Image (cartoon, rainbow, N blue to C red; front, side, top):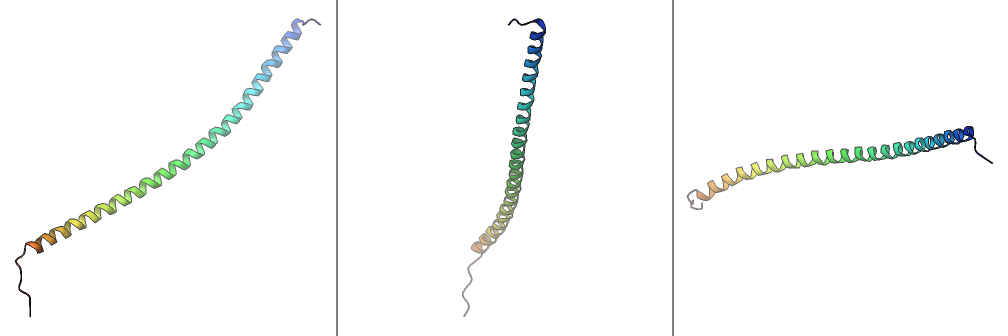
Length: 89
């Protein structure tokens, strides 16, 4: 059986429609994958922000502790350099 011009046009149209349908189906799959990836990235971003806040809080606590140690160091040096006192009693 010979293909006529009309048959070739119909076959070509069906081929284009099939490729377009497969392309649209794969786009939906990619959309789902992108949504999953974006969701995971959002979760990671939230974790990173939480960790950054915790690190900032720990840094502030460490700075306060260092300030207190510096104050105590000054007092210790003052006591060590003071003249010795005779024991009472």
